[in-house]
Figure 1: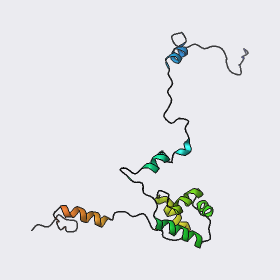
Figure 2: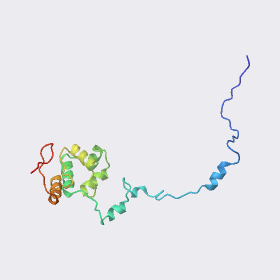
Figure 3: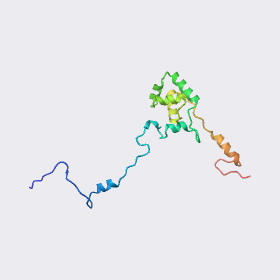
Figure 4: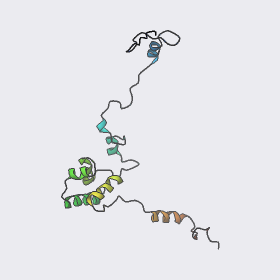
Length: 160
């Protein structure tokens, strides 16, 4: 029986594929580099959504940024002190940073329904939510411009 030899390891020899010539050198000459906008900048100067903090503070033109109401801040503070919890204890209980609780209690935070619902569960109380335009008021405003028609349940409007 003939003896077979198996080589182990890698083949470090030069391999050429394609039409010849150094294609890597041609590609390297044609490439240019660009500096990306904001690359290597201070990541702590931006919020989670990517909007810079400076823009958030200066936003007073078209849209205003909604902040936490004083009633919500006061309610969080009272409920937390009633349970004899520190801001740090409450933050770890809802899996958030202590700065989040501090911002909510100071009225500087942007309201987040997820955080507010976590706070309600841990503080075992109902917190006042940020005000919204009620659906009834919106329907009344829309109905003033149009003639009202009475509807029957599940059917077309009644004829007169």
